[in-house]
Length: 507
Image 1 (cartoon, rainbow, N blue to C red):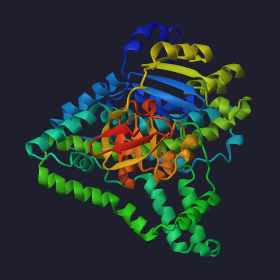
Image 2 (spheres, helix red, strand yellow):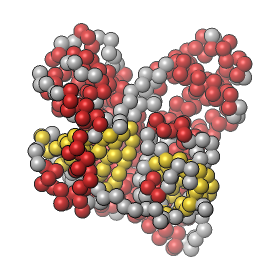
Image 3 (cartoon, helix red, strand yellow):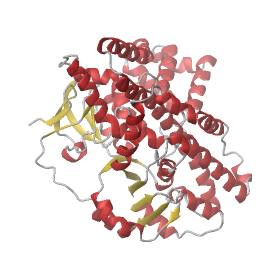
Image 4 (cartoon, helix red, strand yellow):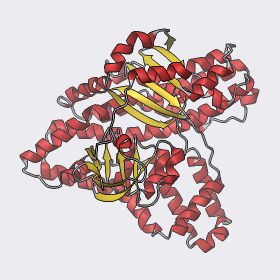
């Protein structure tokens, strides 16, 4: 991408009028830059115009508010709507176009090791960093299609389902029907990891046998294999962890202490995709949806799987990139924290000898505003970043709002105390029975999600993480409220009626 001074000022009046899709999560500039670059990348596989054209990012306190132009999402979604009227199996056809590059990424990650980084010359280190980032971009450049389809077609899919139900004169249980028709039929990587731990716990048996069983070769081998497969599972767009066997043993201990029926839980998780598939087939047979709706549901189903695979690869990329950034920073007198606030191109410039003032990187870590438009960008830090944010986004008063609506992702009706989660570092404040409220959820929120009685998000579509996890956990979930985190506060007693898609404060 090319730096363009004055780009924000030039487009300021246009940016003020835009409608945005806001994502919030733990994130740093370097890793989010990679996501943006692959989504903006134009290529034939995406369909002409299937890439995003602009993004905004606001970084502060190791968190990011990421903004996608809803005009982009609607434009790309309309391409899918047009194709869905003419052809079948669109999702599967697109999946196949990226398979070779996804395999190449998986193979690179599988043999990635920092053991010999210190032996590499600066040139070879630069080539390795370039290879990792380029393979990643090629493997995940489908992201704009996945996100924009979900954002731009959710309401259309719901309208088409309601139209079908009107024709069939079905007026009760529409939320449940929508949830079944859009449910994933694959096993998420979070559930795969959970099944692996549950199977080890089942083999161990009672808690009192934990220490003895862990010494047995079969159990030791299973714990080691689990650690090797899932050491990265708590990563995000800012933090990279190499979880130890000891960490997973503690998780197994917690499972045994919880006294859940482990065999029943294994069966439930293992059977969920098949149950969803059977329920979906039963509804298809009963409702006889037209080809257009079937095509949209096929794309949604395939993209739900694809999105889960993308998340897994993103967390693995965080691991690999962090190892490289740490070594590059060591050689050039920069901490890993500072390296996280260089763009992809700036890391290459650093390796080529360019000097970046520590004061600038420190300022970026505290407050950064980035604007990317096509292959051009501009970055502000500190006071200039704060001013740009203030100029584009105006705070609205939500104090008088007592109830609001969203899209049903999983049905049910509960009451509980709201807990606003802005970062994975806040996830422990969610206690059993609380309602987890977030801009959106991430895989590393899973500890809190398992305790929550329901989920409410500002953003998200039928293939979003919150929707998938809520269905797997069997708890009510309302997504796309836009204002949930702005209206609600920690401790508010609220009612979530996901059967009808509304949330209200209880006085």
